[in-house]
Amino acid sequence: MGEDMRLSGKIAIVTGAGSGFGAGIARKFAAEGAHVIAADINPDSAAAIASEVGGTAVTCNVAVRAEVEALRDAARAIGPLDILVNNAGVTHLPGQTETITEADFDRIFAVNMKAIYLTTKVFVPGFKARGSGNILNVASTAGVSPRPGLSWYNASKGWVITATKALAVELAPAGIRVNALNPVAGETPLLKSFMGEDTPEIRAKFLSTIPLGRFSTAEDMGNAACFLCSNEASMITGVAMEVDGGRCI
Image (cartoon, rainbow, N blue to C red):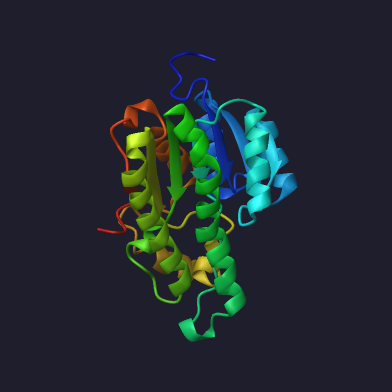
């Protein structure tokens, strides 16, 4: 691996790495020299991306503490962890708030919020012991400029943004940086869920709200994530950076 690679020699966990933005982040990190631990609830997806990028696959439900601890143990077997990307996320179908089921709410709480609590609890002690570490949370423009019909998803992403800033302030003295990315919707498995249904008309309406006129891509997310997790961003912590083509302006 070339020393000029931005993540040369780094070990990085990416949750939800099997598809969408997570896969894009895993590919970019590997291209920049990192050993990627691809964690996904779907074992086949995790194995496929790990094989593609020369990384390690771990099947993990990030909302279950024992599985997050097993992920930590798998990482330890490879070497000291440098980067943790909390990318795994779910949404509910668009609908009036009073119609969203408790099961949907519980799932969003578990994957979008509790999982970050668990990974922080499990991985921060190792980062503190080393005096360095990098946490990147994938939030959303939904946490800044909510769309109607996605209230509890929006709220969960607002929580991620606030958690990112709170952790950044608390963990800075320990040498740990914590940032977030706010993508606009992209060509991922969640896109149809955000829109309710995928028709040319609905796509056109959705795209009309994005000044640059296109969805976020996995490559866009990979590039932004690589910057924030590299030494180039050593003075940046506590930001929630929009990767949204101007939607939140």
